[in-house]
Every structure is written in structure tokens, then in C-alpha cells.
Image 1 (cartoon, one colour):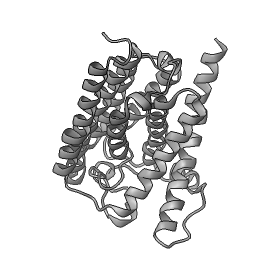
Image 2 (tube, one colour; image 1 turned 45 degrees about the horizontal axis):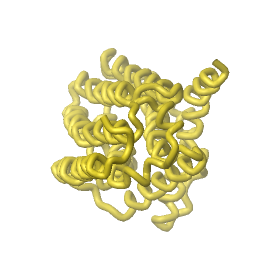
Image 3 (tube, one colour; image 1 turned 180 degrees about the vertical axis):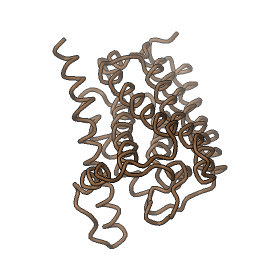
Image 4 (cartoon, one colour; image 1 turned 90 degrees about the horizontal axis):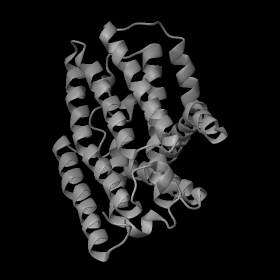
Length: 289
């Protein structure tokens, strides 16, 4: 009971703070790589509270409802993850959250939002198969889809699932909306007048979207930490290293066409996962089916 309460506190209150700090590290490190001083680490929080103080303008009521659905479903998925629940349920809930963002963009008349929504759906079609197959690979190794069982697994999953881990890194780049896969909206917002799926959001509603991104980032980094769950601090270092790697790739790669994103994720990402699943079965690792 005490563990569940602590997990809820971490998921609801600590996760967005950690996510915001990581976003600050992201912006600072990106600026240094580009030869700039960059904003302070706490700049995402300054921006968040500044957006909350802006006028409450919204294009349509449906647009606002879908933004709240995006937040609620993402937080619910993170709570289930922190409570050690089923990975498949968590990923399905995360998929509905991403769909809510696309539906919100479709609910307005802006053609920029519609283009962003189409591309958001393409992103989902790219990373969802990777996440689901990664969950299957973990099941074949641990005998369970439950996060709690994965945490109590004896050895590091990375040793048995290295190819699956590489595939998840591709999904992480897409989920973080980093180059070369920032398709639905540019990560570097200051370089574009319109931002695709976010075009019609402003003020406190844009703050809502940014807050959801912080929760989403912590959830996907938590999933990466599962690949080295014992000891968990090594898993946290592994997730942090992957986060830094995505920032470096973002600064040396140009944005690719959506067709490249789909090709890389389906051919390379899904291919790596299927190869790792075959290796597990042939080598006889894990409890088997």
C-alpha cells in the first residue's frame, strides 16, 4: 500500500518536474552544440507559467477536449506503469493519447493542423509496432507483460534483447519528436511560423500540451530503464544516456520525409525486433511459451 502511494506521488507530481528539467537540459545542451549560451535549465518552467497567464483563446471546444484527453490518457498510462501494470495496456493507452492529439488537430478548420494530424498518425503507425513488439520480446524473455515482474527479473534484459533495445531507440526519437523524425511539428519551434498539429493551441492550452510531453517523456524513458532494471539506478543511467544520444542525433541530422521515417521504423526497427525474437526462441532464452 505504501509503495503504491509513493508510486502515485512519483507519477503525478515528480514526473512532470523531472520531465521539465530534462527539457531544460535538452535546450541548454542543444544551444551549446550550436555555439550559443542557451537558456537556463529552468526555462521550460518559466515558459510554462508564462503560457498559463496568457488569454484563454481556443479555436473550438472539441480542440480543447482532445487536448485534455491527451493529458489524462498519458498521465493514466504513466500511473499504470509506476504501479507495475500490464505493458500492453499501457501502450494501448499511450496510443489513444497520441490519437487524441491528432483528433484535436482534425477538429479545427486549419489546413496546417490537418497536415500535422496526418503526420502525427504516420508517426503513430511508425513507432506503435515497435513498442508492441518490444513488449512481446520482453514477455518471451521474462514470461510476463507486467512491469512489476520485469523489475523483479534476475538479469538485465539488454543482454538478451540488444536488437530490441536498438529498435526502441528509434521509437524514442519519434516519440521525442527529434530530427530526423520531427515530422508532425518541428521540435525547433522558433524556426517555423506554424507548427502542424500544435498550430491552433495557444496560451494555457499550449501549456497543457507541453505538460503532457513531460509526462510522456518520463514514461518512455521509464520503459527504456526496464532493459536494465536490476539495479534500477543503472537503468536510470541507461535511459539518461539514451536521452542525451537523441539530443546529439537531433543536432547532427536533418529532418527526413515521412516516407523515410516509416521505412526506417518498419524495415529497420521491426526487423531488429523480429530478429531478436527469433534469436530468443532459437537460443532457448527465457521461460518460453
